[in-house]
Image 1 (cartoon, rainbow, N blue to C red):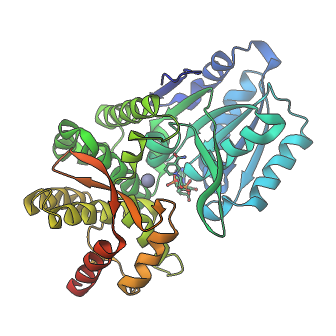
Image 2: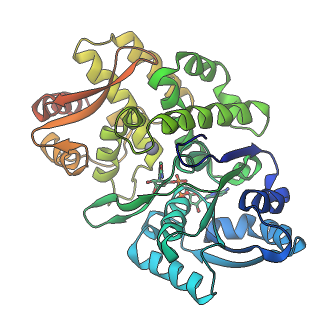
Length: 368
Ligand code: NAD
Ligand code: ZN
């Protein structure tokens, strides 16, 4: 990934944990036993994969402090951030030492944000272990935690020294989490790469097993995200395209947050993508056959695509709209929304009126 002030590698491949020490030392430009690390991870990843990383670091005489937090979104909090910071400071790690985020997007966001503020910025390496983290959250430098006012409202743009994505760790990922990450991959095709979407229609099933197709899909996704981020690191323009499906997706995540059958992020995004295509069709920008094609693929990959696929009861359209209004994309009385003119023809639409969305949501709820 080539940014104005900083370039770094995204290393993708099978069994990379077994070679992590040399990648870490190389990217930090360090030799011998000079390297000192804090490995931030969650309980699930620690249980499944930390031993292998520990063995590799110990064998290479790298000093490290493991910091294990609870798994799940609730760890993107001030309380957990404080615990992580205290452990890093108690271990007397310096600015030139390195925080490794070894886990999914939660750990990447939390660990990266901690690295960005401790001693005004420690070295930082991402070792993503979910599909979503490998193709999305570990690339691009957004880090942060949640607030009672909304998700990701406290954070920093903080780029890592490198990203090490071991595709074999995905074998232990629950299939529901894998599918959720896959929805973001489909999103990349639908933004502006119709060839990639078509390729996924043919090869999608094979992405689910470890092998060259999975690796290719991850490489193509990272390449795509890296290119967008390189052109617009601070989301002043085109990076917003990455929000395709996310306005409706976040709305549904919020709506189901306290339900036992809550949607996970990528599931919200899958339904959100279909809704964004339907909304575009209603505005006569595209036609319903395009929506059908998108929906057919997401469904074939085991993802929910319609409001009626959500097990719990949804609130009414007015309440749903308030969840969109809480989202940061609203300014005054208009919304910025990602719409589409066809497969891989998404664009940023400004000035979408909340009334138009309300009418659309009322219709969709009536169809359930
Ligand atoms: P997550 O980190 O909560 O991981 C999902 C679940 O999988 C957790 O229970 C975790 O313990 C488990 N897990 C992780 N790796 C595993 C493995 N290899 N085997 C078995 N289980 C494993 O969630 P996520 O979906 O990776 O990330 C979601 C988070 O990412 C959200 O907080 C979201 O806001 C953030 N995000 C950030 C960006 C960004 O640009 N920074 C982009 C997209 C999403
Ligand atoms: Zn997302």
